[in-house]
Length: 331
Image (cartoon, rainbow, N blue to C red; front, side, top):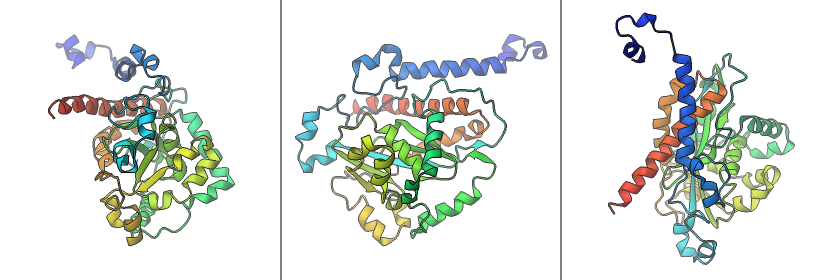
């Protein structure tokens, strides 16, 4: 299109500018994220309780002490008010957002520098390497034979879906009530949906939420994931162990139908008090949108891929933020 606008008579004479256009587009997307997140307007000075230099668009409706709630209000709340002050989180793995096993540019870096929805890749890989080598890794229970049909199916797909993939997908965290992707809550997966990857996503997305009183974590494999969750955090993220000990685990209402009866009794949101009729499947709707980027991002370098997916996650959150304002005005 641009070529024809430049010379519509003989467009072959126009020099190719795709590489320059792609670079300029990537820089523009980075600057747009800085505007939407408030970093271009000094938001860190106005919200000192939040993490510094964050490029993520945050959910304005979830309970966040220092932003829309005071600590005294949460601490003084009665147990039957927990549904109003609980932070609901949802986690899920996506095996469509892969990266092919191909030659890439080793000098390519992410412009967002781990300040948006992905974390710094180098630090994350160092953690995974150490976690795999640790004796404490044996506590994870990933090697145990799962009893739920849903988990056995997940193990089988790990074998067939990851051929010729250097990165086999992503694990992401959202707020379960409003569907906003959490800051620094998206991690690459390299060998399926390992607990270590999810632990890192939970730790980084909650690192400025240590004052929360109630947490509910919704995950389709929580029946296995939650068994040694506190042990793993005591080993790898001891500063967040007290916060993680407050987590009440649950399984989304549709996914739990593929679990055994014991899971349905202990982890169904239908039986958990103060869950506010949360159904926990909202993150699946986000994947339907983000998967449209898979065809292009699977071919990218690591840094460019992170920047591009950060942009998709950020636009999703920004769209929800603007629509939330519009719909709340109608109530």
